[in-house]
Length: 203
Image 1: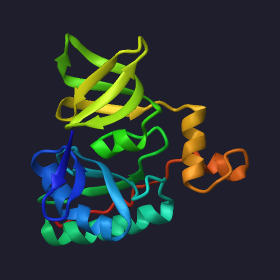
Image 2 (image 1 turned 90 degrees about the vertical axis):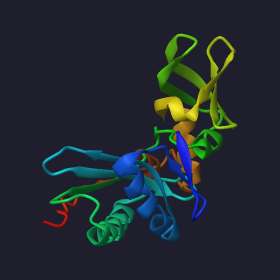
Image 3 (image 1 turned 60 degrees about the vertical axis):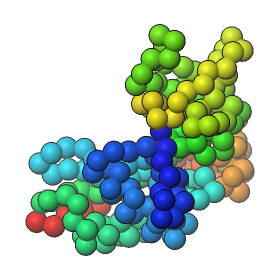
Image 4 (image 1 turned 180 degrees about the horizontal axis):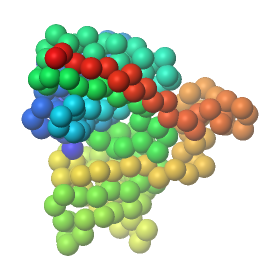
């Protein structure tokens, strides 16, 4: 589900075609700014929307100001590269606390937390899995199911995987951000900033 950028050793979500080209182009700049690309999608046809989900390199949530910085940086790159003919829109958001798991490092970073995953290709006749994240090994995600057994999910076959929002995850996210989860800042930690500047691309 993840791929390595050969030029910069940046681990990217597994993407193909246009999405992969855009991701490979913007990832080094995001890394230079202290961010990581968590997910990228291009949606729509007449005026496509490029959706970018990012977080800080340490895995903590980004702010609205971070979204603005990412939007300006990515917009400048896409204006020059012009990967999409005509007009396009750019939408930047935080991965959120119950974030997608799109790379091997995500499965390692959030080991011990609950997650759900869905495969493109059935594994032993099964597509959907839920349980405790156990890390990643040899391009596979490991998840411990409710019955105690472990499922080994090929990262490249995972259609989508996401953390399950729990008190433990909220507390861990608050601690990562240096916030008190029981105070006012704890409520703020639950939010996933999002910015949609409605930025048009080249005509």
